[in-house]
Length: 222
Image 1 (spheres, rainbow, N blue to C red):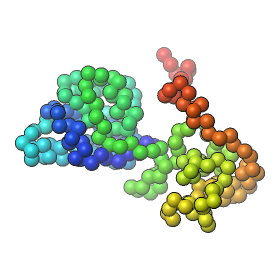
Image 2 (image 1 turned 180 degrees about the vertical axis):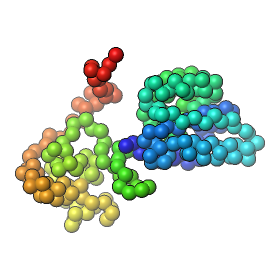
Image 3 (image 1 turned 30 degrees about the vertical axis):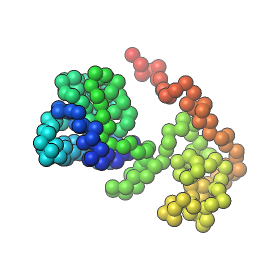
Image 4 (image 1 turned 90 degrees about the horizontal axis):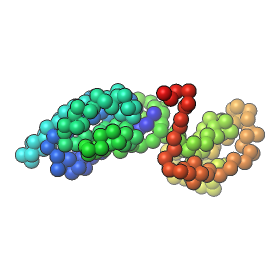
């Protein structure tokens, strides 16, 4: 899922300074799971903003909404009556959702209420860890299901660097060496021969050739 963290309230207040009437828009998708952009967070953030503005004798009118998803066009229509009637939309969805709302309602400023993090997993309640950078050229079949791009601090493709020691990354004693994890997993799978296979260096310029990436499923298009 896509993770995120709340922006500091002072930063949000500074963004909202020119506006009197805003929509705080949440999302029932990923940001609800990591508890930064769901219905409850919409309510808490709205209350904090109202109190902060009242303390400055500069009241803020807020409409609270939470969409099923902000990254799908059919769900954005529920926002139209408010987006076009208020001064701005403060979205606490991920960066993709925020940009999509801005595309659909181009006459209304759309502001980010969170900082989007990474594609990750829930390791335990309240704790998420990065697992994928969406590079577009997956090699997990050769690395035991462990991604060298996201799990290695240097995104190395051909084994651990000289800074790792006893399975620990030089970046921090709390970070496991991504390649040690890969080697251990390949041993457990009896696939250590994959460790000797050369993987082409990541062609970041190629994967980004032509600007933002796009996926088209002809069998799903209307």
